[in-house]
Image (tube, rainbow, N blue to C red; front, top):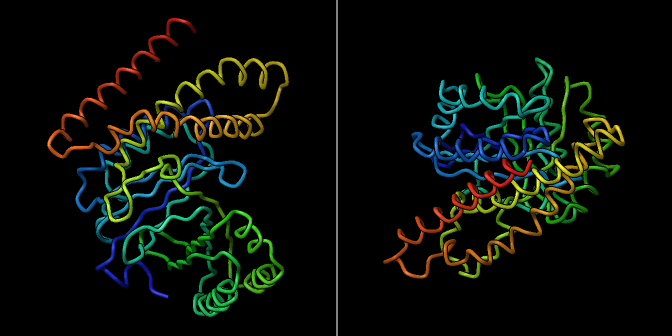
Length: 323
């Protein structure tokens, strides 16, 4: 299979998976929004997608950053600007980030309801044997029910040391069925002498599933920055109020739960409520998400953004005074 460097005519995506401290979820969402605006002017940048946690399958935040070429993606990854942004978010994160470069499909990113990103560090000198093993597991998983796509990327010198495989399935059940199948377990055991380490992280589709767009096929997708703003509009009060009334007084002070358990429970509640409320608020901002008239589109974009920014300010001021 070809890697990102083999087809320079196709776009390339940087896939980042990271674990955010629950009390910093709102800060991280805001920081990511600022990063989206910052990277928009970077040479070769196409788009960014943000996927919040979706426990229990996906416990990480997933960020997809798409560029016109491998060189453009590599330039961003190694830039001083990115390093400064990363340093500013370090206090919000837990554990290590997974950062991978993958070549997009011919028509761009293809999200699926359930995906797995598998990183493998291969023992020196075992690369050829590992590639032969990879062809065997690719043939086996091609028969797995619900498989929608498979990407395999070799290391990128100076950027990415691991081999990366991305599996896309139509449902979480089918993905988990393949990951736990006897066929795959046997193949993983066969690969053990060839690898130093590997780990799997899950991802679901992004905000698109919350925004029911009736414009029909062939139209431009909804702007990511607008979806981000509406998600933040719901996420901020949920995370804040849950932390004030439940997270700290109940989970930490009364029950004495560990940080890991509190993180999981907080993610379950905040993401579940966000997923319920975002479609509701998106329905009220349909006029802004997809302006009816091209002649007034710019005015509509600005008006909607100003309204949402005002709502941000009102919430921050209210919480500041009350708590």
